Every structure is written in C-alpha cells, then in structure tokens.
Image (cartoon, rainbow, N blue to C red; front, side, top):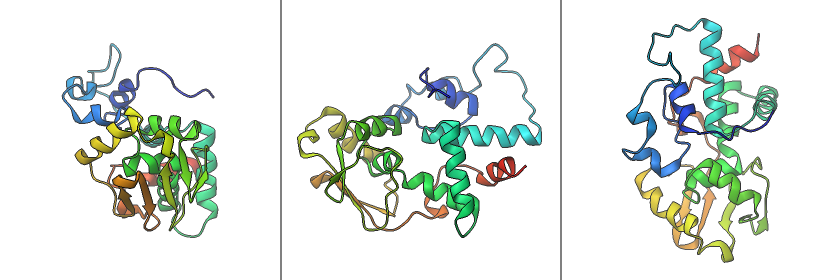
Length: 208
C-alpha cells in the first residue's frame, strides 16, 4: 500500500481531531481543522453514527495517520507489541513513540513527523555518534540523538527548534537545543503520551 501523499488537513477533518500533521501551522488560525471542523465531502456536515467496528476502525486509522505509518508497518508493530510482556495497547503506544522519526519530532528537532522522516532518510541524524537513516529505528534509554553538524544551519532545523517553544517536550526526552541534540531520559510510558487515543479499540479490532 502506497503512503498517502494528498492534503493532510483532510485527514484531521476525517478523524474529527487535530493530528498535528503540519507541525507549527496546526497551532495557528490557518489550521484547516479550526476553520472547517467537520469531515470532508458533500455529506461531511451530516450526522454520522458509527457501529462498534466503525469506532475501532476509525481509532486505528487515526493513530496510524498520526504517526505516518502504512497498514503493514502498523500491523507488524502491533504484533510485536502483542508478543512483548505487559499490556499490548501500552506497548504499542510506547513503541510508536520510540520510533526515531517520532522522537525527532517530539524533541523539537523537526517541525512534524513527516519532516522528521524526511530528514532521517537523508542521513541528517546520528544516534550515539552513528548515522541512522531508518525512520522506524527504535531509540532506547540513554541514547543520544543529534543532528549532523553540517545540517545544523538548515532553515527547517532552526525553525523547528524555535517552534518547539510553543509545545511541550515530553518528560522522557531531554532536549539540548544549543547542541542540536536530545537524550532519551527514560522509555516512554502510556502516561507520557497526552494525545487523545484509545489504543484498546485497536487491540479489540486486531483481536477479532
């Protein structure tokens, strides 16, 4: 399945929730969800009633789109979370947060997950001094993620570090803006993720 490349503001409207897919723009009055907070399409402003399966499907689609994953990636991550010890839903959320592209966004080293994924793929990030160009790379406690020295003057990087002041860096991340780096202080728990999501619905969907 190909990755979605259309207008991302439609996705926020479709899921009836801000997914912050455009980074800092989502915090301004230019946000399409603020101007048209209803699903796209000619029937978008009508009443929508979901079945139990519909609610589960929409929650899965919302989380998948929020983190920028395709179905195969998301399903594989769920199966790995299911094999690990602990609560499957909490494991899934923790693993989504630990992806390198998400970490870069959460730390403020990129303005959005899509931008972070682009920077990672082009080799602008180092993990413990070694270049990593895999967006799905899982960071671990104690890892130091930094931006390549030659990339630190990029406009997107400096804008991201300025924009992070308008949102909160999670407690499990220690940002050092002066050094263009961030450290994994601890592995993220479910309580560290403030974005509204009901991962239990995803567990119920895939458990059928």
